[in-house]
Image (cartoon, rainbow, N blue to C red; front, side, top):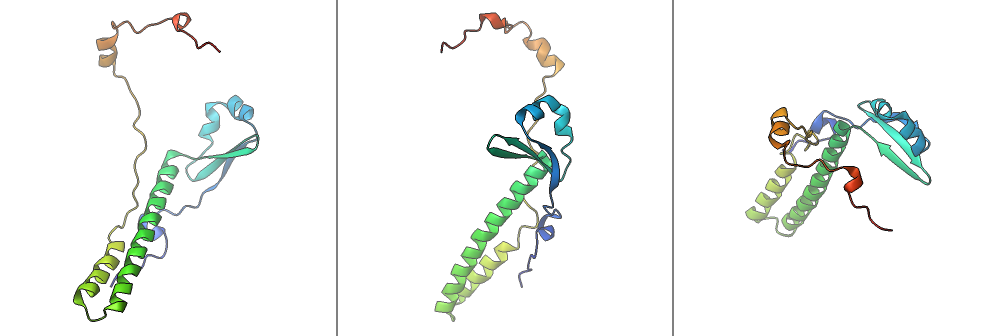
Length: 153
């Protein structure tokens, strides 16, 4: 029998219980606070930035990746349930056909195969090693800002 998954903690051991974090009423307030403002956004909290008539939510990459994984799992389950319902209709139409019963069994078992949400570590951090700096330092990429052509408006 296929095990029943009752909530997200059964799948990922993470429940999206996000709490309100820092709030900025304008972009200027956020800008003045600087990078220290972002440090106030802890894991499991959601910051709010209000700009004119728009509201933006800011969260840490760990929380974002978990939410993306949870959304992917919801999509997978939705597609899987649709497939199982279709297979059940075939069994209802042909109750004595062993192939349709096998199809229903296999489609239902697909829903329980994944026990982990798809998550990733986030974006790779870009680092230039001292060896790379030494190797490419004589390539003439130092262009003064005054020599960069500006667009004409």
